[in-house]
Image 1 (cartoon, rainbow, N blue to C red):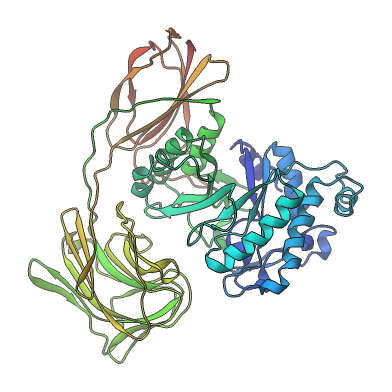
Image 2 (tube, rainbow, N blue to C red):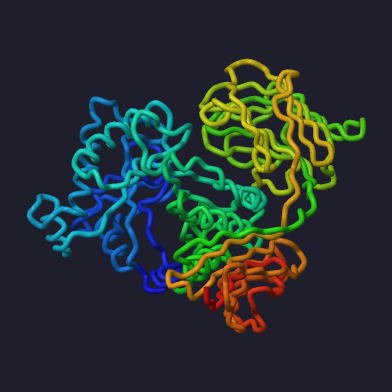
Length: 574
């Protein structure tokens, strides 16, 4: 690995590293799936993999390099093993033995003595001593009955030989219930508001259930190429992760790296070219939390008023997710007048198309591609936020149902009604802060009447005349915080997010503390605008600044800047 990129990761002080990653693990087809035995040994002989993101990998950074790198970082390795499933096919159960044996052999490669078959191979590759390995993830974003029966095979074989090894299970489409679970992997990609609203989501999680690993999360809508408000949304969410560290045992931002000309996902924590690199504001949030990790979470109480409800103004869209569908009779009414009515008798003039295969044919808008996140948009902020959207939709084939977007300020924003999502099992609003999922599915070759009524902060969704959702967008509070202390009890660490547009003067009341040193240390991440980003030309436009606040005490006031994350370290006597 390039030295500057390795230093960027080291600067994040990771306690663990997940590898080889997400969808890369399973591949689009099994022929593209990662098999760890093909990633060790002579680099020139490694086959590499065709990546689902559209490029060939060399295999130069394989399983051995991964374990070695984690050792150098003093981080736990979390390897993700393919579980016999790809996006479009899977291994029959009677041939799963090879895949289960791959997992057992990987563990022996990492942990086995030099005298074992795979331990000897590790030694031949330059590392006689065993690596540290305490975790293994079974698959990535796999779910349903196919995954559950395969998870059981891996669980039984691994636990029989390595009972101390912690297994991470996918929760895609529901957690496996046929075996005990150590840790479950949850993934979230959404808006800054989504993450702010979920800062306390783990407060009431059942402590008798499996531990939680938030394996992938990031603000991916309204984020630019990685801007300040995205980082603050993530930071607000992370205060909740840290506050619930007894249950949320691991969390990892994703993805880490991008080389911009080859970018297939937005945003990413670290940008690099042939000679340079920089971290996004989200990178700095991750580093600030990790470099100021306390040893004990302290109880804290935050009293703050709610902010304003900001309802987006924007156009509409229709889309699919690995599904083929048709749409027609799309109409938008505002104040009793029709401001838009679709006409697919000629062409798609005015529509903004993203992915898939769109055509105007026979008076309908037809999409016949099988890709994920395929969408078509029309309209803009001049439509406002209050209107009624109605249309008809028909599923032609595929895995799911329909996506109907509304109040869309950005064509890449997820603010939609997902009808027949999650493998055609549920309907839910996404990107509005009040998802309210309900069970439901969409039949093929049947026209459905869809209607969305938008008034004020309210959203009402109807399918064939029946109301399915009634939601209200909630106001956003500006302040989020978590407190921890060092094991010796000599330092208190406060992490505070002010997501609002104004500085907030707060009253700090540190109970149970006899004395606070008058001068502390603070690191503050902020900028003039929520949309500010870093770049190769301005790599530290949005970066933490250190200061030494004075006149601190057990009861004092402190002003947190607008649009900021602050880490405040206080010397204390208990």
